Amino acid sequence: MSEPALLPATLDIDRERGIRLAQPVGFVSGIGLAVLYVVLAALSPLIVSDAAAFCFRLALAWLACEGLIWVGVLFARNRQGGVAAGFLVTGTQSSIILFQIVWASFHGLDAIFLMMGMAQLLPIGLSSLLDGSRLMFVTMGATIAVGAGLLFLLPQVIDPTFPLLERCGSWIILTVLAIATASLVYGSSTLYGQALEEMGTLRLAYERSQQLDELKDQFITHVNHELRTPIMTLQGTIEFLQSMHQKLPPEQLTLTYSQAQRSATRLVNLLSRVLDVQAIEQQSNTLEFEAVDVKKALEAAQDLVDPQQHRAINVRMSEKAIVWGEPQMVIQVLMNLLSNAIKYSSPETPISVVIRAVPEAKIRGQAPGPEKPSIEIMIKDRGLGIPPAQIPLLFHRFVRLPRDMASSTPGSGVGLYLCQTLVTAMGGSLRAESLGIPGEGSTFIIWLPQPPAESLAATAHQPKVTIAPPQAV
Amino acid sequence: MGEKLILLVEDDHDLREFLQGALPYYGSFTIIAAADGITGLEMLTEHHPSCAIIDVKMPGLDGYQLARAIRGDPDTALTPLIILTALTQDRDRFTGLASGADRFLQKPATPQALAETIAEVVTQDLAIREQRLRKLATEEDGAHE
Image (cartoon, rainbow over the protein chains, first blue to last red):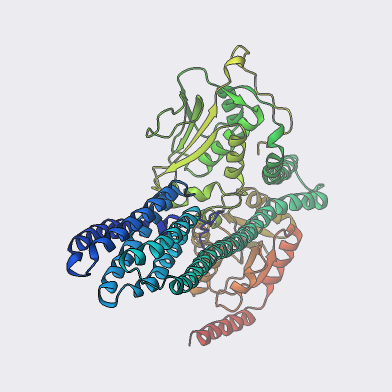
């Protein structure tokens, strides 16, 4: 039988990956190219004839553009993404403008206008990929404004005979192209991302439901099997009594009646455990809590699980322990855990229960603590232990560890899930610790909140055994 | 016919205790019982019962492995085996292999049904049983090729 490895309930999408990639690239390119730009601007008189004025204007334009972009970063939906986008945009625009200068030095200023379209296109597209949607629009606005500025300022300053109107047309086309491409890039990347996410979520939901189906099947098979043996004894004893009662000596009659009763009780317990889970899940909103004496609850649980006291259970508690909960639920949880400790460890090994108060964990970084002042009940056995990798699975609704499935240890598999549901319903927590080493055993730790201050005046209630609890076999 | 010695290998304490006490009333049987596969194998080799009733799901050596062990030992190979199972799928695991059982009973099985099955298998002709086991063995060899 394969080990169930539970799928997570929600898709864990790495949204930060793009940002993580972009940040260093953007940073390096932005800063590095800005430095390079300054250096080349200083050297530019050697490259372009009217270079000083040209570079000055281009520098102004660049600064304005980048400045606006960084303003946009302030409004980015995702600050980190915005900053990364800012760097990336700065970097790419710087490199493009740098390229423009070099190009212009060989091919004249006309060629710049072709470049300007690209200068707008790339950064906008890139920034949109980093999920800074407002940033994208600011960038677009900035580059359009800068582009217009460059268009009108540059040629007039450098070459008064520059054919402005002609250039206007090509610039407009390029700008429209740039906006269209940017929108396309943005739109498609967003849609693509959304589609991936949806597909991923759907696939995950499907696989998870398959897995739950499988677990449910396993559970049903297991319960089916577990029902048959006590039913066989029950049916057998009845048939035996029916056909043979006249021949039987009194001791045999008595024995057979009690065998029948034991089997019937086992069946009732098995069913109760299964149905309890559903009931608890449905009822958790309508619970009424009261102060519960842990010691008395423990004694009641012990009495039900092991009335003849075949196993010694060492209980250590420093002071009176009262928790805020529902008495039946507390007993049920203790019963399940004690019963497990008894079942999964050999008779000569000790079982210990330690009860103490734990304050709330106020400081992060400390060992895990409860949210409110609580009582800790620690049940430790020295049995086979639980392989640490399987501990998270223990509390799943239908799971039983592979080693239990192969053995005759009776159990419906809902025990720990039920325990955890009950404990959580009372505002507490339940966890298991084990090294998985036979002989070291396992430890189950329950935290249940102490009664709220205003109720401390009231005395603890004796746990009443009202609605039929799981019966002793 | 005389008392037949029947070995019961069943890990459930209640069922084992009950059958051990009740079955003798249904026929001239003496029941010896084991709670797990290994003890069952030991008792089988020591006492040579007329038939063994084996539960499938047991800790340690399960019913399937026990049956193979029994069939594997020429000393015990001809012991009639009655398999008690809760699952109908188990049939397939047993048939087709040399650890073939003589009878399957699905739980819950009444003591009456058990007794009748026991009676059937212990009176089955020895020669027929030998022949059947030989056939199963050759089938398994064939499957290995």
